Length: 173
Image 1: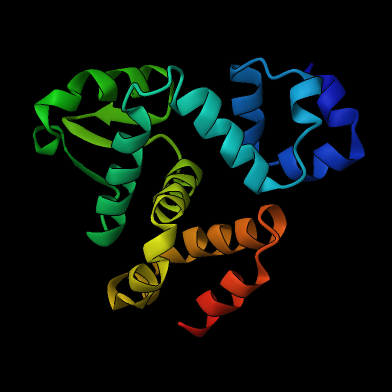
Image 2 (image 1 turned 45 degrees about the horizontal axis):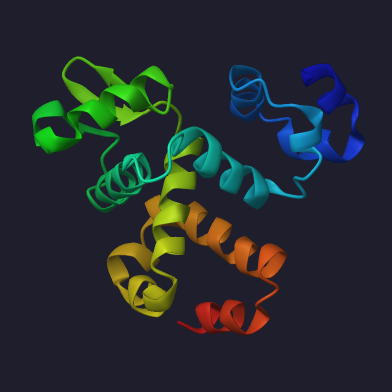
């Protein structure tokens, strides 16, 4: 499957980053699934629908996006394990097994910065009705920790939603 995906010129352009290739191999993605991807935005959607949220409503998605926002707002790469709500301990353990989060030396972090950026993008997607307020918050607009997530969110508006008005509105905030 991986060889067939890499032979596809269009897909090679969007899956050539090592962590994305690792995800594809880890999850045994078929060419038929990957052939539906047009951009990184599609890969992010697949990642959250198929990897993060293995079972609908299991709460893993909300755990990941809250953690990403918290780490970004605190300019932190990790946080102590005891700062996680005990009710989320099982989710964090499962996300660690799936190599989304890393638990090491009593601290929790994302396994890779790419996954943190994707999670911050999902945080913004979940707040699309309040996005102007989220972006106007100088904490996020001016923070380098949020720049990639804002870029990915903007690309989603243009590439997937074809919502140029929202994109222009976002630029003006």
